[in-house]
Image (cartoon, rainbow, N blue to C red; front, side, top):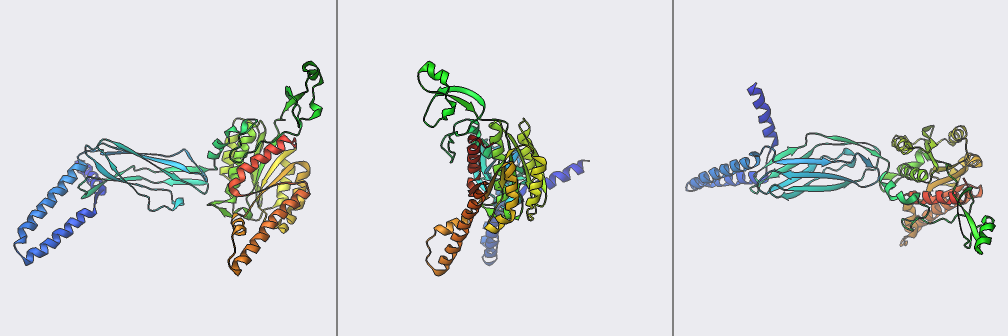
Length: 453
């Protein structure tokens, strides 16, 4: 039994022992001196003394690093889940139990999706001290990410050898749609907004039926809301103020067809739509409306009925996490059938898709018009930011003039698509991917304030 215990300890010892460049440099120097000793025998004594000194230093360095059983304590802190498209903090904490200063090298085995093969952090760690190292990871696709071991190599000031410490365990973390964005929009539940992040205050010009208070008349208020009894008592114009109607249904409809495969800043348009759907669902629930969603391409999936309950955000988050696609051609007739069959109440439908030409719009227009008859349909599609940059560039050659002309033509066609949809009463949002969440929130607030739903 004793022999069986000795073997694993010996194996662990040799696995943790690493010879540094200084060690091999010393061996090279001794070999060089040995060659001179053959030529000049007087050097032989110097070589012998050098070898003895080298062995002594090696043994001393070995004792320094291995006399303390647990010289380093390593702890890596990972978030419960990663937020897609956002910077996520990973923290590595290293505590030293050595009574002398050491030099450490931290190597973390980052998930294969990031394709980072040169992660290395070097630092000096004082005696009985600890160091905390934080780095950021930005995932660009949903799914499971496997973190391997955290390796720390420690060496003394002699630097002949290094001792490896290993966490010996990996972790799998799921990457969900961008829940970090939700924190940026916590104030959306308020009735008034700060003019930051592109959010704009929408003046209420519609009317609802839930009475809130009587207030002084200001220019722009509806004269139909004047309270004549309160006006007579106060001898100045007073109006009734109403709250927004609540419990309206708002559905996020995500096209997961091939038109959503286009990348922007590492994320596909589909992932931008997923992130925006999560944000707008949170805002809708905070505004006391009902949030729901589903996705479609060849068929309809991930359907979450519009409700307002405590577990609704968790249902939406899990549904968005599971949105998967092979980027087939989208079937709008199937979309119309799903809306007709499953959404009976007049609702606001936010359709995230992408149209690159008028012909593409005309092919689907009859389905969009049919949906808009029973609901308030908002078609959300994207600007091609690379083409937009090209239209603003100064052309210096014939080829650049040609490219800029084509880019202007495509940009103009996007505006024609907006006009074509608006002509049939279909509301639109044409936005850059990075402004998607802000623009969708503004549109929702505008539609709600005008009493369209």
